[in-house]
Image (cartoon, rainbow, N blue to C red; front, top):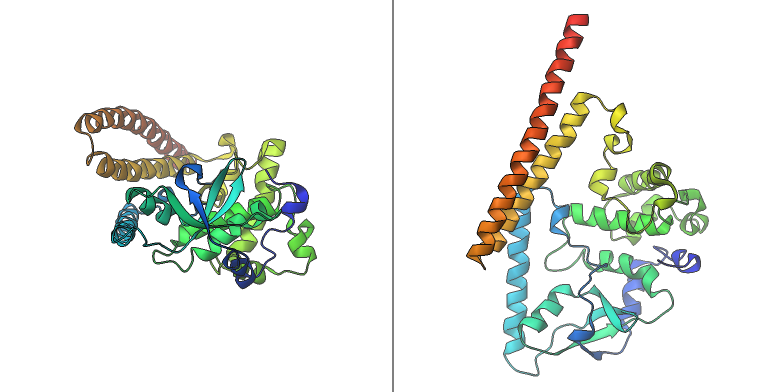
Length: 306
């Protein structure tokens, strides 16, 4: 987690200035083994895209892009790709930009990758913003939902995970508007959504208290729903049913995606996965059916009492 003085730097830089900080660095040769498998600055997350068909299409696009890069690298040992952006983390590095390129170098059998390493004291503070800005213009641009999730993460860091209101942030005190903040985050989401995120950040803190941190920070797709901030006892049966329905849809989409990936590699693993999905699906269906029955009874009570 960042210290307070570093946290205050988040999103204050113009996109051009942010990019120039990395572009002006010298190119280094970094061993792939020294780059962490963890990807805290990867804004592309298939789970953030709610439509299964769109997720599958984008996964295919990314796979094609990596294969194109691998072909380029294998033409000769001297072939290189655009340097990746890294920040140091202990004895290793985190990727800020270049996750596809790292995968391509590994698949091509390379042991080292060209990189530009930003070692400034504010590196961690601006890494999420940098990842969001540069990924808005890549060959496979961020999906709107991916961009929203990454912006929400930046908002969390800016407000110290909801501990600061918008008026208390360094950005606001420096005279920044919602429109300017949206621009500094790459233009998506827009200023209206940014304003909503700033309000929701404080609400998350009020809901979870001092336990709110970077690990417990919720997804934007959850936090943006009004029912997220209601206790179960405050929800109507209709709201409970809507939540259960969304869970079913997410499970169906995730199962479809996983089936497609697992089936390519291991028949035995595929069969085991199917057995687990069936067990989980039966349990979830029973739970959903119980809520549907409760909803019907609730509606009947309202009809009888009206």
